Length: 302
Image 1: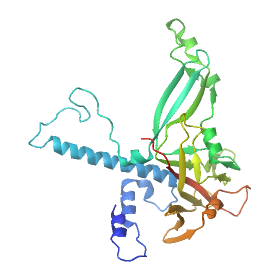
Image 2: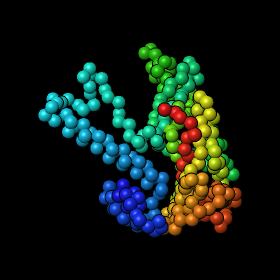
Image 3: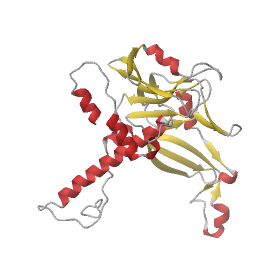
Image 4: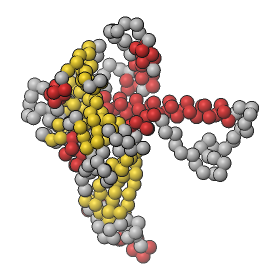
């Protein structure tokens, strides 16, 4: 990263470096960031992580291709993901995957035959629905709560399916739930503060008060022992609506919390973090609310 090099090579102890080259690269890669319109921080985070993965995978593939076409080796005409015995190579695991990727398992239990069908999927962050005067723990419980599939939402059960009565027996009532199978090293939690309101015909910001603790346990979502995390960064949305506003961030470093607001950086007390939980009342003058939370694992999952 050019900006990281500029910062580390600076002789001055204080100062500001504008991320001009970084912004230029982002605008070049994605047309949505070429205008001066207000952009969503969560969408930007997803774009950034996925773009980094693509770049790292292309660099890895280019490096392997140069080795395969070298005079000392045979040129491979087959797919690059195959090996000598015909088996498939494991997908490239970049530093993005090692730090941010977790695995969710989607379990569906047929209520007729009790068969459980599990499907795994990877994630870089968790998007949680929020309620007024709630907490991250309660939001995670709701995320993993059991949902009943009936009426038009019935589940197609392979075990119940019979060739003699295919159309009658394949769709069954079922229970569905989502659980975290493999927690990531860095747990990113996105609070869904922007909700489309049918009666208004537009999105509205939910200023709900949602408590996010300094220390978090995933005891209600992980099957094994409790997974413990420590909060180390928060992205704050400042503003009353989804189409305008400003973003600032809180970062914990060397046991101190810092507030980053463009070129301004100031040290804050840990107690100040609580002021960004949200508003306990619908109409409040406080528009600074926690939007994206970053938790670091205190254990080892790999």
